[in-house]
Image (tube, rainbow, N blue to C red; front, top):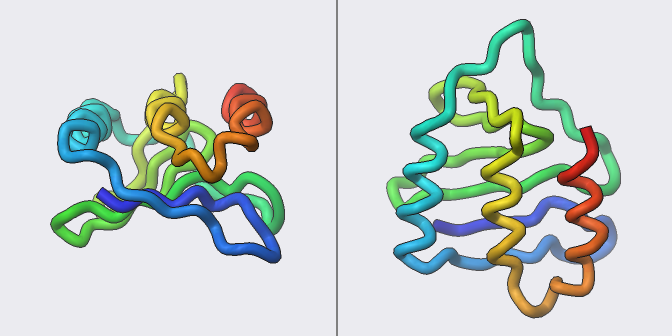
Length: 109
């Protein structure tokens, strides 16, 4: 599974591939999410942290931001932001310096 951290302006967003076992665990986590309700909307700002983009081995794409996950199947709720926290654990070495900032962004409600 290909992951992109959508957070930078003026430089490329970091991308990395999850190991097969981690990708399988993430797929299980995503499949456990329920549909979002109450007119939830995934609208990221123009600058700063805009979440993660995922591309699965089957070509399916996802966008994860602020406790929501958008896919071809609609919008899923992740109120505890488990998917974002999962992806934070797999940051590549080249962007570990932004981890404290990302933790703050993911913890924000």
